[in-house]
Image 1 (spheres, rainbow, N blue to C red):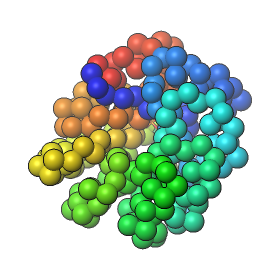
Image 2: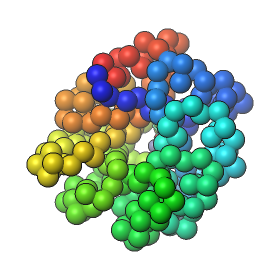
Image 3: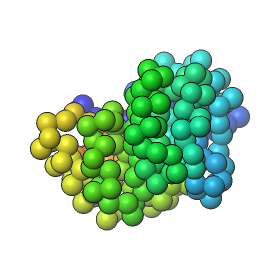
Image 4: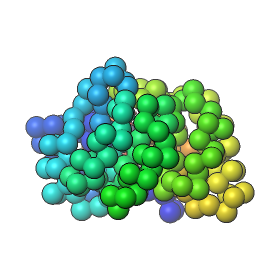
Length: 215
Ligand code: DX5
Ligand code: ZN
């Protein structure tokens, strides 16, 4: 019941973005998930800083920024200055990991570290005591509406075991293909923050959908 739903506005109606964000927050999403794609790190382009600036004026909860960009450290300050609360970047990007975590912390923001489905937990183990959230991607980053990759469940459990054995309190976030069925599986494996786009915005009763995710 301590789970958190983070609404990925990639699946919102961009002509009615303010309305859709309010809908998600009223439905119980404590986080709003903002996906930034640069067409280089992932084969798609989404939105960036000017949109974040506008969105930050209406988001009441936590603005959860997921950077799918090749050199995130270059933009940490811009995202921090324009409303991000959590800045998550990919371990597979070309920015140096410790330097990027420090840059985020120096801006007074929470640092999330993300891994793609094929990146083993062993690659990022050493950073677990330095980050505020671990994002285990449950689809290949780049597009909303994809099918959940079941092989990622073992990685969630593995990361959770390491976090607990070290006495750390780093929450695990999952992102991609989350719906009421896959939510059960990721929570059982140890995830606490569930990002969902198409499942939430495609649901007429969003409140009920959120309850199913976080229960
Ligand atoms: C994918 C993004 C996700 C995406 C999730 O690269 O990081 O946040 O919007 O969408 P769904 O929930 O539809 O899989
Ligand atoms: Zn995302």
